[in-house]
Amino acid sequence: MIGTVTLNPAIDVILEVSNLKINHYNKVLNAHTTSGGKGINVSKAVRGCDRETIAIGFLGGGRGRMIEEELRESS
Image (cartoon, rainbow, N blue to C red):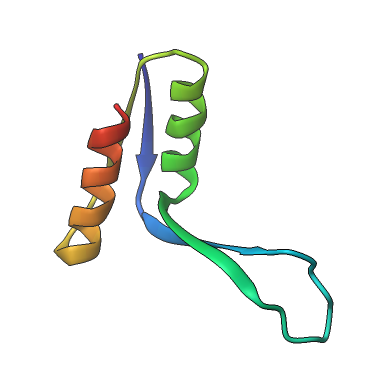
């Protein structure tokens, strides 16, 4: 098993656009939110390689619950 430590977990927002134009307004086609942070991202990659992993860190509040729920669903 591989353990990762994330002292500053985050919520990443991924915006999908059809054609990115620099210095222009770009229409967002879709937006996704996902848990993030270096340790969490490494745990996701390890899990993608069919290995056991555990992500360790500090969570609190509504966003912490969101991160915890997402990680539990993906395990």
